[in-house]
Length: 380
Ligand code: AN7
Image (cartoon, protein in one colour):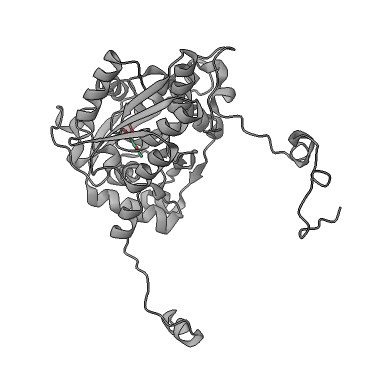
């Protein structure tokens, strides 16, 4: 059928066939129903749970040949690019579960402390579930994109003159004393949702990787991945479990010093956390998986951040680059021929200031709009 692009479509010319009857069904494309529907039998939901979803999950596992080459010895590295979730971070996985369960339990409002991504996800899902979202953030330490999201989604944003750990203390008490449901990763449904990332990795690879490298802040995600791998292992969906390698920013590395850090500092603001709420869980994961915690400096984080973008075409936020920075730091420990997955937890667009301030590249400006001038600027 010839399509007339110039005449506005009327209800008569518009297809009235349901979506499934159109091209979708004749292709191999199966619409992704979101992670709760996909992994329903592994999650604590039932027929009466209202599913609040933005069709999160199903993020790509991308081979990174340049980074693999840096390690050599037949090691294959892939990144789980969770920055491609609906609000741009892995937090959507936990939030679809936490908000669906909050809705099932009749919650009218949710609250979280956040370095930014949790607030964006909580705001989006809460509003979609018709709840109020209160987010408590450390004043001045949340990346611009995340703040923009929380505001536009309609969260009630309260900036405290303290760090994330101070904010978390407050929201824990708020949830005990007021009618608001806590949706930080202390909420067990958060980890239930987040464990689906491990399922997806195994579903694509056909087995668990040898290593999983992951940034660690509040230590919820490392705990969730391990839950997912263990659950799949018990069900025979994989026949091995990965070594869990957690990386903290050097200025916010309580797992390296062995005690909480009162004033954590790092340019990777997402993981600027001194007293992880999931401390014991994450420590248990390290022990059980024969894994390790290591620290990476801001300089190492920025190197990996630039390398991912300029060599692999993948733009993640600084905290996410900690997983790759960490892998490169301990690359001599990786067994030959191993498969390594690095988790890229958040999208680079979350923190445009960091990209602009720390790129080695710059705009050539002050160029007259003339062919010869532009060509000269291009080096021709
Ligand atoms: C991009 O948003 O804690 O170890 O309040 O945003 O599970 O805490 C964010 C954490 C890694 C660390 N990468 O994950 C918050 C928040 C990114 C993050 C982490 C965060 P956890």
